[in-house]
Image (cartoon, rainbow, N blue to C red; front, side, top):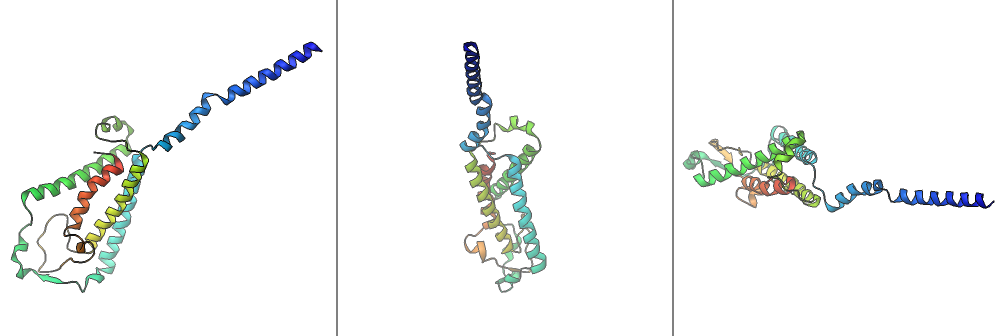
Amino acid sequence: MSRGMIFVKGDYRNRNKTYSQALSTPANTQEHKPLGAFRKGSPMNSQNELLIIAITWATLIVLYSINRFLIKNAFLRHSPKITRSHMSTLSKPPGTIPSKVGVLFVFVVNILTIILLIIDSLSSSINQYLVWIKVNFPLWVNVVGSVLFVFNTIFGFFAMVFNPNYTPLYTTPPQEFILATKGPYGLIRHPRYSSEAFLNIVLFLFTGIV
């Protein structure tokens, strides 16, 4: 009887010991690591960033096409018009050389950032090269950058909608054209250029690419 009792007690002790060890295994600790990393604010991956950019641009391209080819800027019919014969200086490209270089620099930086983001999303091996030009912001900074990106893109979209004569590069305007005074042009003189300049900061917060 005493030997049987000792065996039972020993068995219970072994079971309790095994149960306590199972509760303190490293596996449980490892399961909580991703959650802890997310709470600390892990950066948004490049695939999600590229998806947000693609959806935003695709949506606005569709809306711009509807306005351009179906609605045909009907809400701008009563906007003031200018005849080019009264303003002969319109045939010359505006701006100075430093301003043109600045505009070109802004556009090139934005294009390069998008190209690097596409390459990063397609191949993870490039991460070792991007470490020198990419800042790993916490997730909330990327989220703020994504929201600013959407609003900034919408602002630039309205700049093109309210100025049907807009082109990325300067072209000689037609004999008679609409003077853009509504929408974003009622707030700032060059909303499209301002949008592109602000996009430099927005893409940095959004993607972390310098």
